[in-house]
Length: 233
Image 1: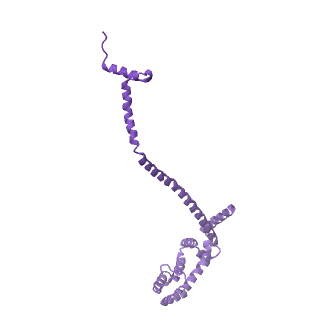
Image 2: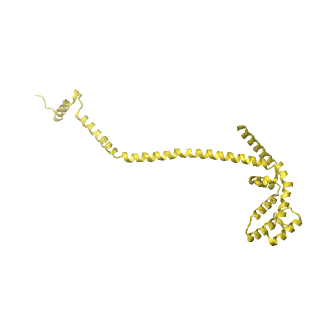
Image 3: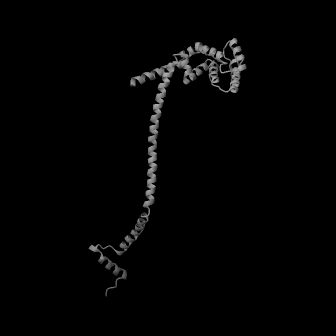
């Protein structure tokens, strides 16, 4: 008499007989596969609710990337524009440097020329002459009579009077004429003293400036720049 099979084996055989092709896949494996599929199915169902939010994030990220890629392009354009402006300024400054040797007036008309000349005068300890001339130029632009008088006294005390902190080299007669002009200060009260100082700089300091090593270097660079520019045109 054969022993009876456990009930679970009987059920397993029936399940195997139902599978197509007689593959012999056990019901336990089938149940395991179904169990593993359930979490994946639930995950997919969870993802189904995400596309809207993900899309918004993707759009935002794309926008940020666009900005980042666009900024260097703007910087490049600005850099090119700056280079063009710099090149134009260099051409203008080169011409200015060469014009300084044409006349003292050309030098004084140029802001960079005045700066270069002032730097040179410092090496000779005579920058007070140019500072006085510039102070007189500024003084002439004053319109208020009250300010005119106070400025006149300040300029006289700093540059003109005997033993002034920055006394300019003018004769005694010019100094006394300037002192008298202060009693009724006008925009012309320093004209004579300014003219004497200007003549002194033009005849004495200016020729030495043109022969100085610093200006010679500037003219070489300016000439080289102008020649290279012509060769490219």
